[in-house]
Image 1 (cartoon, rainbow, N blue to C red):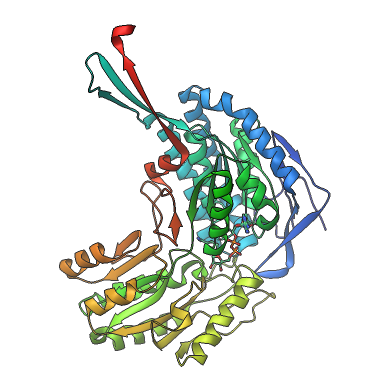
Image 2: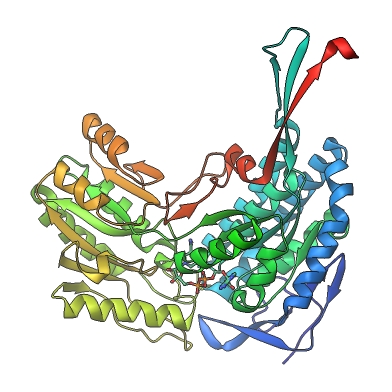
Length: 495
Ligand code: TXE
């Protein structure tokens, strides 16, 4: 295996292996044991080699973050703003490089991957502004000669645990939010795609971030989770609902503040009066974009009977025509599934749907491409019912089933008949129907004539339990998690 230092990866040099390191208190550190990542587009290609951290590495990272906390929270806000802004500039200038690494390691097609890196830069720029914008409150007191001041302080040391499906955007929005509000942090990226987090660490260092403010530890959450949760003042997690529950239980013991962003089983309703073309595009993008590996992806297509036949007919043609291929190939529309476990999970859903009597209209089979990879033909099922396994649990893959319903009321009932409640959507040209759904949907985000996936960084992001828990992410909402409130009563008369 060929390997340079952790700064490797430039351009499209496929065979360059990224040598990842932990970043502990400003020092890049290798470990005794390591693990490899391989490209899901070509399983023969090793993308990165990373140290396999243990609880002692996490403890060291947390200690470094704690040591750096007083200096960071007291830093002049203009200086903190400038540092985050510079990190955003560096991320933007390296978007192609980071996106290329992301595409190789996670399998997202190159244009989406570069777009994700660019989004990461925008997030840093946004939170650079938040450093300065973030207000406190001044209020008159109920007592004469007194005033009340409400200020927002950093929570302290935050553990950030992130998944593989957005390996630069999610770390970026958690890290930028944590740092903007004066916290220091330890990032534990997904063991399936940790490369972008290494490059993020590099550019934060290059931006001039003081040592220990941002720390990075590699390894599995199973081994590192306990220490990450119990040793921090707050933990922000994105991943599966099952892992989220576990973290919540662990956090209860140490009373660690928790923010969880978890799974979705997002419904998209298509009503008879929808613009057919818009509805098909919205369903196609929302369901199959990024190989269906988005917590906000459309996983249940709920279609009223008047438009059902035309919609199903047009959608199946578009799904069947999607070009599945290597993440770096220019004509690829759908990259491979990210991991072997994810592929096995997708195939199991496809089998269960067939066994329960759903009609497989297209796809669902593994594909061979120019290199061995986790290629899956996007699957669409007709004739599914709300009780089928396919429509009950998150598939997190390029798979969806159409559920035929009578009208808006039945569509809303079916949409809400699922415990997950992250995102939801409706395609209609009737403003009353749209507004009724907006009010009655139990999801945290409602999209009208737009894909259930595709969110923006300046507004709240998240859903209700068990799709989420704690304060929302992104926008100014993230201050609810990353800050603690202090109320001060001031008696002017005694001064
Ligand atoms: O998630 P995990 P996985 C869903 C999706 C997917 C399923 C499994 O349905 O098929 O989850 O994916 C760390 N304590 N989503 O296995 O295990 C782990 O190392 C602390 C939806 O990848 O939840 C990684 O860094 N941390 C989701 C992170 O948690 C632990 C995105 C996510 O891993 C831990 C990804 C523990 N005990 C998957 N165990 C979304 N909301 O978008 C694991 N981890």
